[in-house]
Length: 250
Image 1 (cartoon, rainbow, N blue to C red):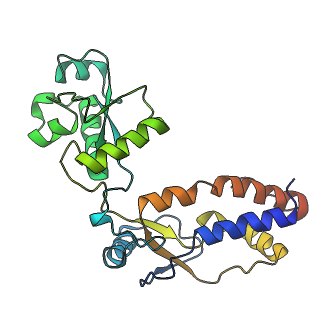
Image 2 (image 1 turned 30 degrees about the vertical axis):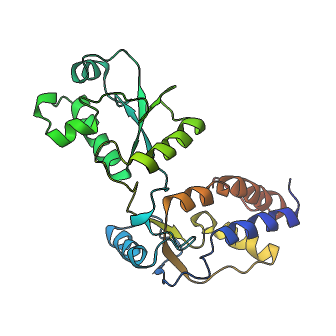
């Protein structure tokens, strides 16, 4: 069981990762302690702030940043049925390739795949939908990465980032991977529980009285979220053992 000093240090480090850059000029959207499900209106408000001020953590402006995380897109799409793969790409040899794709095209592709697997005819797709699933795609190995399986490996992901920054999205030729900011709780959602208020008090940490959403780029969002699960495992164990609080999940 981690000691009190260790638990306190881990929480303080997470709060520091969650802080806004000192030079960020925006203002967050006020929300309640338990506002976990974001409405379309809240997302729109956060997006509008990001469009003006950029990511609150690193000040990145998405509309010009080609180095944000690109999606590694499997062509043919992994979730597409075998029958559809063979009909769409007659020369398909059971191999799969990864291409860089922007987030918008990735979302749109998922919808097309669902419709095909649900029974929609390939002939009824429009030209844009056909491009999204790789119809007619020529596998230029300078613009893609042979896929090792249904999950993109870290090495493959790094290669995709390089190709995306160089070539853009293979589906729409867009040069930036995403234009949508994440709505970041500037006090981590995972800390918004009664037992975490008790943990903060026991550790001598100040629990906030106001909560905000601020725009964050996907890269900072991914980096920030990496340690939260570990911290919550330690914090819940601390609450159970030291404070005798019943915690069922985190």
